[in-house]
Structures are given as structure tokens and as C-alpha cells.
Image (cartoon, rainbow, N blue to C red; front, side):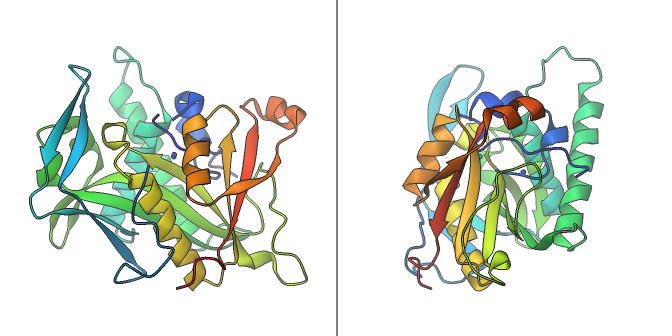
Length: 290
């Protein structure tokens, strides 16, 4: 599993599944790609960050296809809103890396990856700055890890998704967008909450992804838990996420995170948009008091 939700529609207009081979040109808006730190109660010190304390973490050795376990000495994951340009660039690079498959012998692949990352980076900045019509507020939420913890076992991830932080270099290992809006482009629209003026009490998760080397360590659950807390701070009462029908890993993650089925995409729409059909999952946030 590399992607926990379906890759998004084109940028010009978003947790691993069969959708992982889709182009990042379809990545920017729409739904979004496993784990503890669910914030059903305010067990985490602040609403802007979340820490996963772990004694060890599984790292996939991509060269031997074996699982290695490394001990994290006095360290932890951090899950928080990304604000700096360096961190947003690292998040954009992770999305390119996660939502695409690049044949190793492809011509000028480095330049192509850079182009895709620049495209997503600029779109991400526009969304966060409130320059996208129809979106009241957007936040990029990232899971990060100190570079020193994985630099020798995940070299490509570290070189691609590293950013400088005031406390030292870190690596973005998971990411998602929280979008306060009535609907996402080219996606099924949620039906809750109901009533006049309730549209902007609705939000969607999109671009949910976790680095393939660090899956099954709780990152997806932690990202969703933080998104729920931030959404509550925004006054959101109903949270949605889209996922492809054939994305079993994504569906399992969302259901374990409290989401339930609301509706699914018509077959004709999926054919017209040349993509797998989507399911729309919903969860109320009133059951997660701050």
C-alpha cells in the first residue's frame, strides 16, 4: 500500500492502491493516502502538533525486500500543520514520489519529478493562501521525522523530502490536505450538514499519503487524528474523504478512523474522468470533543 486515497484531479482546476500509478498532474485536489494518536480525547498537548512516541519503527529495505527494525532513541514523529516553504516543498515532493510510478530507465526522470513537484508546490501555496475559488480554508498537515533517524535506511526518501527546521533537519514522511469547502472539483459532494448556511461547516481530506518505507507505523491514523482536531477548531462538524473502490488499504484506514459509507460515484462519471470509481466516506466531528 502506497497511497491511502485516490489521487486527485488536475491541478488546473486531491493513503496504496491501484491508483498509485496515476500522474501527479491529477494530484492537486481531491481526496486524499496507518495509526495511533487518535484524538478522541485531548490527550495531545496542543491542537497544532501531535507526537507519536515509539520505541522502534519498521523500515522496508527496498534492496533486500526484508523488514528491518531500528530503535528510535529519545525521538518521535511530529504531526502538525506545514507553514514554511521548505516543508511545503518537501510535502509536494512526497506526493510526487507516492502518487506516481517512475520506471528507473525513464529519460530525464529527475527533471520530470522536479516539474511535477513545482506544479504541486505552487498549487499548494495558492490553496493555503486562500486563492482558490470555492475554498474557505486549506491546511497542509504533515508527519515528519528527524533526518538522523532514517538517513541510512531510507536515503532516497531523505534526499527527496528533507527540509530544514529550527531544531534541525527533518523529513516529511506523511501528508494530507484539510479543505474547508462545499465540494471538491470533479468529486461527489457530501450531504451533511444540512440547512441554510451550513455548507462551510463541511470539510474534505485530500492527498493523503504515507511514504512506502514507513507504512504500518501509525502515520495515516495520526494524520487523520490531527486533521480532525484542526477541523474542529475551524468549526467543522462533518468531515469527508473520497477513496477508490479498489483501494482496500485506504478504506480500512478510514473505517478504523471512524468514517462510514455515505455514497459512491456513478460509473459513467468515473469513465468520463478516466479513473477508478470513488466512494465517499463521512464522519461527524461532534463525537470527538476537544
